[in-house]
Amino acid sequence: MNTQLIEVHNLEKVYGTEDATVYALGGVDAAISEGEFVAIMGPSGSGKSTLMNILGCLDRPTSGEYFLDGRDVSKLGKDELADVRNQKLGFIFQSFNLLSRLSALDNVMLPMLYDLHEDEDLAEQRERAVQSLESVGLGHRLHHRPSQLSGGQQQRVAIARALINRPSLILADEPTGNLDSRSSVEILDLLHHLHDQGKTIVMVTHEPDIAQHAQRTIWVHDGKIVSQEQDDVTITSDGRMMVKELML
Image 1 (cartoon, rainbow, N blue to C red):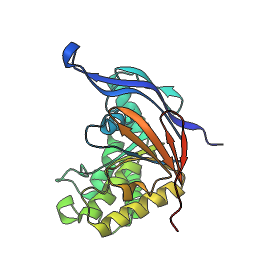
Image 2 (spheres, rainbow, N blue to C red):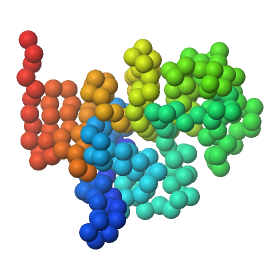
Image 3 (cartoon, rainbow, N blue to C red):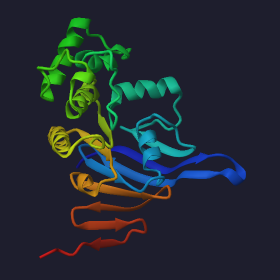
Image 4 (cartoon, one colour):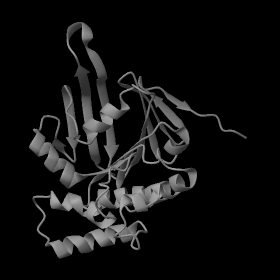
């Protein structure tokens, strides 16, 4: 039985005070097991991005608990959160977030340069970065800058960077949002390959056809989880289970 990699309990994120109080998250409870591929969906302003930022240790909840790999990270300071991000998490962003002046190889190496626990020398780090780029099919584009790469290739560089420190969890925020249909298929195939290798993936998307690639979909609305879908079963927030009708 898979162990829980992520557990959040009564997670709240509040902005403003008194009459101007806004609940971006209003008491979220969720769990994600090691090796799962989960999609988070919801309309604009639903709280899905806030939830993703907290799961990625980019923000802290106002209240509640967030256990990542058995450790409560919800109350850690900025330096401790930065360490968790570098050691445990790999990020894939819609806008790629590559440094334009650096080559693909140098972009992939960046997380290792910020890893205070890294004991490899520069040559070993470079070799690991080469292997990471080769694993996403870009061994022939090591020295190309982002402007010399297609959108799909830039996202592959971002995935290679996300993998470089061997993270426990990959967080993908609209990973196909800036890509054409063909590149989107290639990136989703790559995410499936990583999942088949045992990686845990949490993906935010607003596209139902993209969410269908995940094993499970968590629906967020008005800062709360309203339902979860897995295969042909939907579980609502009040615990009711509904089986989808089969289309003949």
